[in-house]
Structure formats: C-alpha cells, structure tokens
Amino acid sequence: MNTATIRETGQSASTAVTVNCYELEVTKTASTSFNRTYTWAIVKKANVTELTLKIGETAVVEYNITVDATYTDSDWKVSGEITVCNPAQIAATIKNITDVVSPGIVATVDFGVTFPYTLGAGGTLKGNYTADLPNGSTRKNTATVTIQNYAYKWDGTNVPTGTTDFSVTADVDFSSAHMEEVDKRIDVSDDYAGSLGTVTYGVLLKTFTYTKTIGPYDTPGDYTVENTASFVACDTKTTGSDSWTVRVHVSPVEEAEISGVKFYDININGMRDNDDVGIAGWKIQLWKQDND
Image 1 (spheres, rainbow, N blue to C red):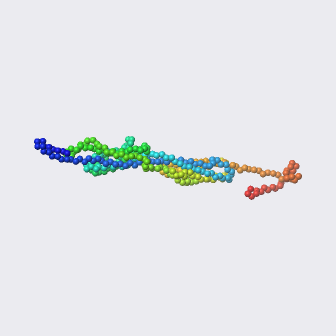
Image 2: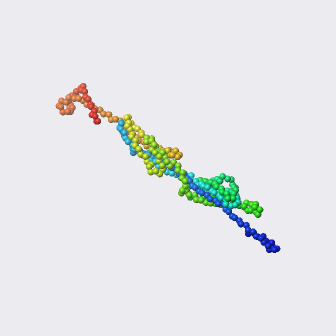
Image 3: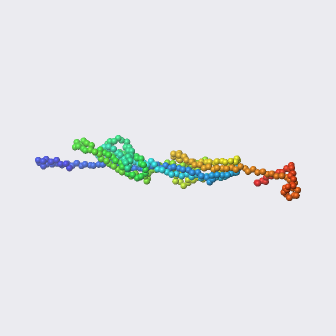
C-alpha cells in the first residue's frame, strides 16, 4: 500500500501495487552409461604328448579346446538434458548455466546459445550436458542456473544488483545404466578342425572336443605334430591362440634272417648230429601262409 496525505487538511488517498514474484523452473534428467570389455583366453590340450608307432601304424588323439573370459568396466559417463522455464511476465537474463557432479566434477554443458542470454517471458531453454566419471559410484548431479538481478526505478529503468541461483539435483546411479559390451563374442577355429563356432560370454559351452588320426608313416624317425587353436574377437578383432605338440617316434622295421642246411639224417632222429653230412645244391622253398 502507498498513501499520500495533505498535512494541512488531513486529506489522503491510497493505492495498492500487487507484486508477483516468479522463479525459474529448472528440471533435469540423468542417464548413466559405461563400457564392459571382455578379455579372452584360450587353452588347447590333448590326451597324449608322445606316441610310438610302427611304420604304417596310426593312433587317434583327442584334443580339447577351452575358452573363457574376464571383463573390466570403464568409460563411466553421465549425461542428460537441462530444461529452464521462465513463467514470469518479464524476461530473465541468464548469466550462466553450470552442471557439477559430486565431488566437484564439472560437466560439459551445451545450450546452443551465448551467455548472458535473455529468456523471454514464458520462454523455455533446453540444453544437454555430459561428464566423464572415474568409476561407477553413486553421486549427486546438480545443475545451477544463475540470473541477473535488477533494481527497478519508478520510471521503469533498472540497475543490476547481484545474482540469484536456481538449482536442481538428480541422482547419478549406475544400477540401471546402459552398458556397452565390447568383445562379448569370439569366433573359435583350429588348424585341423577348422571353424569350431562362436562363443558368447556367459554361455555354458566353452569347451570344444575333436579327434585326429596321426600317421601312418612310411619312414622311421622322430616327427612333431603341432597344431594351433585360435580365436578372433567379434568387435575389436583381438586375437589369441594356443598350441599343442605331440612328438611321434616311428620305429624301424625289425629285420630277421632265416637260414639253415639240408642234411642227410643218418640215424633218422630228425636232428642234425655231428656226423650228419650236409647236402649241397638242394633247392628249398619258403612259403608264407595266408593271413599270417
């Protein structure tokens, strides 16, 4: 209320001014994300390391290939949208808009305008923010909009008189964050068995088994049978491998001699005695029985 009075007569007149006070409406969203990168290992084994074979002989070897992975998390981020609404019937001068993730991590803010920025009566300003975080801990994220204050004279002119902050806070929580998985799948192959298939982390089947026949060899000596299993990660194309060696010893053929004499058995005892005389020039044939 404002009253004017004539002191001599006591006459007065009053009028009222209604002042409507508004504040900016600031809202925000907060979305979290991180990367999960899988690191794979492959192990190849067989049921033997050494074999001894004869010439022409073979042996069946069983191979087992096992793959498994661990993972590490990284690149934790929070991002979202900040919305500023001016419900007042006069414009608001926004000096600055900041966004900070506790403790003291300053986010990058982009509203596409230059500050100070005049937000008209009933107007809305939207912008985005993003911040890199050191880990997936729960935090608080606060957006602050700073406006210029003014003192207004009777004729409508104004003078800047400090600033006022309007803030809004959101939780930074990674329990439902978007997870970007890297190298969750690998393609497994083998020198002998070829392509063995695709393995996805978390799937129970992580071991491949196959058999290979080693031999036959037609020359005696020592041989090395080495083969390698490998994988290729589906995203980064990272590779890994493991080998298994079987040493093969091929024995030489044992040679034998067959010798004898044809003799005259004087006493017909079926044995050659000292006085039994050999018979020269007699043809002897040696026959091999079938399947012997």
